Image 1 (cartoon, helix red, strand yellow):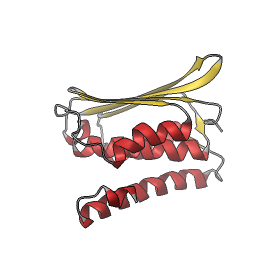
Image 2 (cartoon, helix red, strand yellow):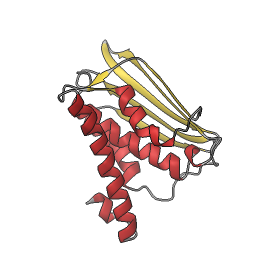
Image 3 (cartoon, helix red, strand yellow):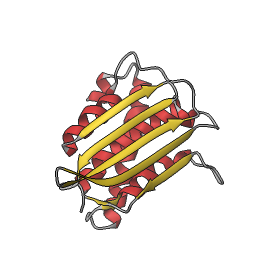
Image 4 (cartoon, helix red, strand yellow):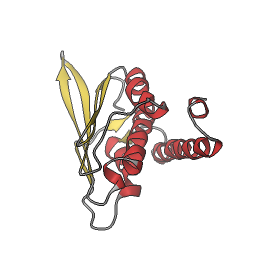
Length: 175
């Protein structure tokens, strides 16, 4: 409903809806491969960014320790990563040959509890300006992900590239 409500045309709705459906399907396939026991964070990030990689390309860098996510966490993170990747491909760093996306994650301790920090950083793309309106994708990243995983999300539209920081507790996240 959010996709149809915020689409300017039927064609825009169709494109956005199909992209989001394919992103969910991709994560469902990863989960089904492991009998819905969980899926690795690296596999989710790679699945969302793989369409933008080219042979011998260094436009995408992934760095983080192995982490198996619960199905709920995998689906929530994959949708947010899909929105980030789609926007990077249309308007941001991945829309130009010299652009780059770095995704780093690590586990850390906050008040004696394990947390995940994931950092998405774009560079080398067109100059970024904050959007004049916040569509479904931005709200999904900022509000939906934080709500689903009981954490915080900071999404910044810096001139040099979009930066997104996700901080979520691992208690419900790791399988």
